[in-house]
Image 1 (cartoon, rainbow, N blue to C red):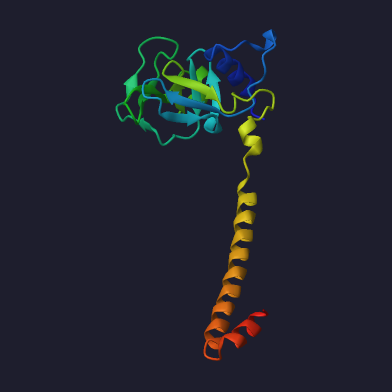
Image 2 (cartoon, helix red, strand yellow; image 1 turned 30 degrees about the vertical axis):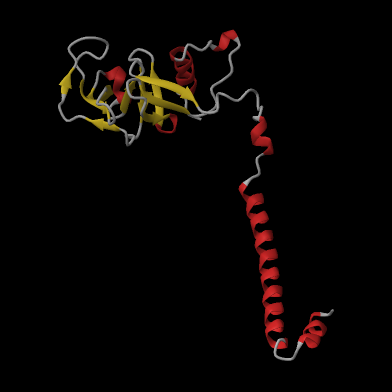
Length: 193
């Protein structure tokens, strides 16, 4: 387990305005998804998550998501907690909103975020997958919905019955075609009547 996980979970509860652990809230156990605050495009998820930094109000991702564009102009921080750092900005691929930074140089205390994609939590909305479910409750319509395997078995059974019926009908047509040349009595005898 990642040693930064508890820090990330605590930080995400605060960002989502969820109660903290001492208020009896449940742990975040499912993946988190990050969306651009302006256009709602999904710009990342917690599968690429490295850590969260409360002071920078950012989440660090180890891989660049497809919907994030990394700028090319290097900027220099002239104030704040990251004073003296150099970085490039990251942008939402959908609307161009500035989402965060990729630090190239940092003060020693931020060395662990260098070259990671930092997403500013003020520029994204966050939600947890599966959060609509209540303690394992399954929506009623899902209980009665057949699964794909059962549907395939039903289709295969109908297909088999149709093939058998087709063979029987073809045999009857063939026999009727032969017996029409022999007369009506032989047709009835061949059909078993």
